[in-house]
Length: 383
Ligand code: NZQ
Ligand code: ZN
Image (cartoon, rainbow, N blue to C red; front, side, top):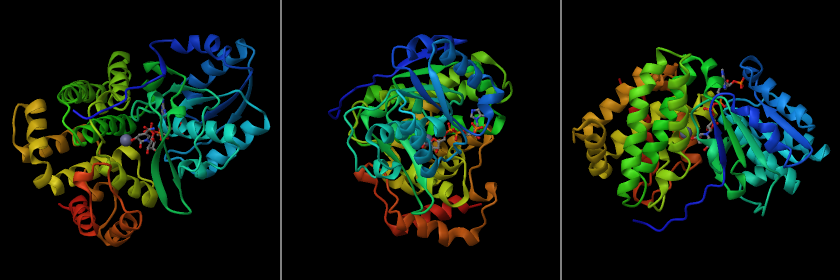
């Protein structure tokens, strides 16, 4: 086992009508809030109104920034931070999925440090504290509600990557599975693929951590049991709750204990697809992860065999990849670039961007070179 520090200060409030506790929490944190949300889903599923009612009842003045995009962009972070600075807000309240919560994390730093969002993303700031971040989660996928990571893209420099800083843990996250009942089938499936990808990124990380392996298998088995049932029963609160919690635990630090580094190459590969084609994050992973596992098989064969044993009672590395791939299909996710309409003539631009951004993961045992990236992209196109 590798050395590790376990630290997670986010207070999670989970369950039906749990946003009813937000006002009494927020009132302890200040008098003015910047409320951040996306392009309208929160207005339709009730989460915006419930949050606003809580803030109003607590006597908290609210200023708003809406329109955060899926695959959020740095301009919106700067725009929202400008409003927060102008109004001297005491907290940022994010209502939405990972894109909104990630943006809120960088916005909170920009408000405190009065700096640009991209400076933060580039690691040019090291804040000691930030205005508190409250999250009201409406989509089960990223784990952003209980971690200190934000992923934002810059369309000018053509970069998308994650930035981590301990001040970015949300102080409180409110997770009412009922809000996720309105997530359509496609995004429900992408969220399930994303949570499984987070478990796998940890599983293929650097170091031997047997307890983390057991937690990892449990989370994937939970998603494999309840994910397909949810796809056929989108309004089922109980299934939504199980998937919501599985997604949170997949990336809240539990699985990285005992490992020096996670893997995260498939995430970096997928981010290039999001930059080029605005591919939804989970869909980029259901394409990138199988290709990465196939290409890396000689190096990671023992891990694939163990994963197969833990998940399917079968140690074949090939069949493990096949089964994961067919699970992604079962939850209606694409597994090849052709499935999302990207044709082989795009190969050069994809490989070029991957090479320009030196796409790699964090596990030094599995680093990629230019040829590896080209071969992985070939596998993303394979019949
Ligand atoms: O814009 P709105 O109207 O809010 O619609 C959103 C968006 O179109 C919609 N949606 C959200 N909740 C809904 C809903 N639609 C109906 N009912 C609801 N209850 O869903 C669409 C996708 O939302 P988004 O927030 O983009 O999805 P997700 O939560 O998957 O977040 C993806 C982003 O998170 C990053 C990804 O790279 C991507 O940019 N990640 C963040 C991580 C982290 N912080 O740890 C790790 C992840 O690996 C990931 O990289
Ligand atoms: Zn992810």
